Every structure is written in C-alpha cells, then in structure tokens.
Amino acid sequence: MIWLIGCKGMLGSEVAKQLGKQGLDFVGSDKEVDITEYKALENFSKNNPGIKWIINCSAFTAVDAAETNKELAELLNVRGPENIGKCARKIGAKVIHISTDYVFDGRGSVPYTENMPLCPIGVYGDTKARGEIALEAQTESYYIIRTAWLYGFNGKNFVYTMIKAMENRDFVKVVCDQRGTPTSAVNLAGIILKIIMNGNVPFGIYHCTDFGETDWYNFALKIYELGKKYGKIQSDCEVLSCTTEEYPTPAKRPAYSILSKDKIQKALNIKLKPWEKSLEDFISSESFNLV
Image (cartoon, rainbow, N blue to C red; front, side, top):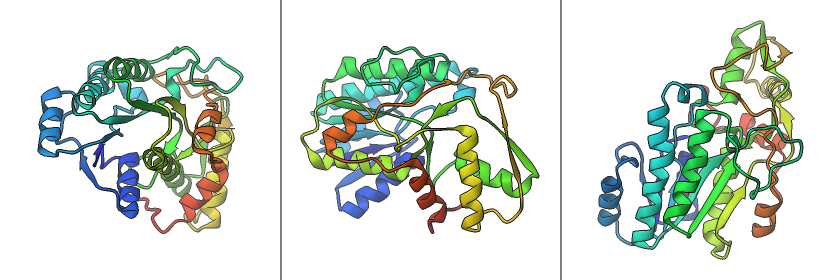
C-alpha cells in the first residue's frame, strides 16, 4: 500500500490520478492529517496498516510568502519531512520526498549534480534544504527528488498565470536572466511511479525536471505561441523581457538553477521529455482548465 501525502495539491493530484490508472493500492491524505504533528501521522498509519511507501507531495511552496511566514514554512518544510521520516522508519516504509532547485544559490554555470553542497539564498530554499537533512537523519530508505519550475493541471502555476495575463492584457513583462527547466507534473508523477514499480532504484537524492533549459522570458514566449495555437489565448499580447533588477521580489531567485538529470535517467533507463513537448501536451490537453 502507498500513502500519498498532499493528495489534493498540484503534484499530489496528478500522482493520485496515475496511481489509480495503474491500479496501485493507495490511500491519500491532505491538510486533515497535519504532517507537523507526529501523532497525526502515527494515528493515520495505525488506521491504514500495510503501508510500504510514503510519497510526500506536501510543502510550503510560496517562495515570496515564506520570507514573512518563516515559522509556517519551517513547520511544513522541515518538521514535516522529519516526522514523515520518523513514521516511515517505525512502520518500515520507503519515502519519496519532493524537494527543489532552490536548495542551491544559482551562482553556478553548469548543471547542478545531486552531490553538490547545499547553499540556499532565501527562506523557502533554506527550509527545503533543512527538510532534506531532517528526513535523512530519520531514515535511510528515502528518495529525495529535486525538481524545478513545476506546473500542472490542478492549482496555481506560471503557465496558467501567464495565459490569463496574456488573454487580458496588452503586454506582459517577464524576467530574462533566470535560467532553469520547466517541469510538467504529469511527467514528474510518472517518474515517481516508475521508482515505485521498478523496485531496485538505489536510495538517495535524484534530480528530475523535463529535458533542456530556458529562461522565464522564453518560457513565456512559448506559452504564448502554444496558447494561440490551441485557442487558449484569443487576444493579442506583447511579451516583453526585463531583468531581475527591474522586477524585484521579496525573495531572491537563483539566476541559474539547471539540474543535471543524468543520475535519474541512468537509474530508470529512460530519456526525459523535452520541456517544449511537455508544455505543448499540457496546453493542448482536454484537462487544461483555467478556472
């Protein structure tokens, strides 16, 4: 049995959908089971005997809001994984935990590998980095998957935000000096299932995004192109570039957060899908919903 924590979120809902399609036995929990309280996790595991895997898709992910909500970010991103690791160890379950490119400072110029030292530059990245360490201290049976620029059908994300803005404004401005890789929740959920069904993937940290690299401005240009192509954007909108300095935010962002995916591709003997193809599949899908 698989326990999916954060089953109603953007990634969790996609994982739930794919678990159902594969006919895998799972139970889901969301905010009703408070991961910051160990007892809540213990009680849930007692009421659902036979759990062999725990997938943690829950987190405080609002990067800017974390700067002024440090306590809540710490509870969800550090204590939560610590409690999950402790519970997993007690019941003999393996853990899949989702982390982020924000554990790095973005000052690099080559893709980050899994063993590079953690060096976060904001509250969100700091809590996610310490959450990884807290989980590792509780159990050896873990997979930490660092991803980046995630978007999906359920919940707020950059793709939906851009398409709404492009439909309603004459122009949008997007930063052009932050590089990374967009990631479809559909693809990431598929990787999570592959790890479970494979059964022989070595424990440890893995990087997983879609394939390739871009910046937010060119990502937005592609969204506009595909939004027009598939009728999601009816009106004309000019996509303009700006620098991070011209568009300040409460939290600093990594300027370069491309993750090396060699390890996950070798472990699963797969080739990751190019981000452009994933984006087209997303925007053209019947599941695409701007509500």
